[in-house]
Length: 395
Image (cartoon, rainbow, N blue to C red):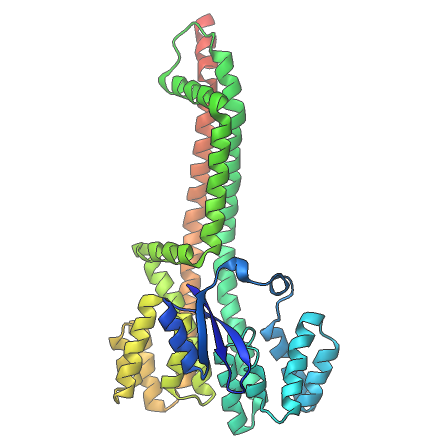
């Protein structure tokens, strides 16, 4: 569930943070952990997103890619930002102007971008802050670009895998509705004067056609209500969370949802650890990426690491590993390169998830087409059965 946290920044400016959390207390604790003084916490509905943000949202990935290219070309940070400001649209220009103004006041780049929490996540700010200590801002930008591109790639795979079945289902539903709401009522009027005995299923179809003719407006309202309910389920965080919980309860889907969460977790942790951020602090930053049960497991792992346990032990005991991932973490501890090993764990899980999506699509899509074909064909056969019987009787 998403909450809107109104808070005071360290430079005494008032900011609004959009935070995914299980409750108001958790959202407030997360904001305080990032150094903000919380004023008010309220639930955020999708209708509260400004229209300007929906139409022209600031792209952090594009900003990072272009800034990295300009820094690699030898421009200073101020010069690169000025160049970006002059070629961006108005929505992005306001953000970059604010960053340039903060840098002109003597603030660091991480402090400047932290004044725009709606666009730059705490994870991004922390990565830049760690890079400032080593003086390698370009490397931090490169790591973030690679991280975001990989996460976008996984997300696009999930969307593309669900797009075709969703389209098939929508088309099939429209065809069935057309047959039931338009064709069947007309066939039922034709069969009203039929002197012979109709087959049982054809009688049922005629009864359905008569009901639709009499109460078509009621059915139209019901279909409209179902469409509105579906739209609310997609856009409302609470309903979306319940749908997610329902999916996680399905044995075939639960493990893949867990793999997706682990992919996000390990790729984010790997980027932060490679940037020099301590593991316990990194855990706090990636916690909002996880759902309720996984977030509680991450909190337990953080507690064990604080008590001196190894990272591999804490993550395995908290249920945040697979058998292969647990062994890879042990190797990472022996080599002392845990950040790179976590990235490899994420890549391994991404490959597993991609294979499952491919196998699932190969099996599910033909079954869905078969189900739609049977539904449409069944309705058509039931409508024409009396005609076949009449032809047989005439012969």
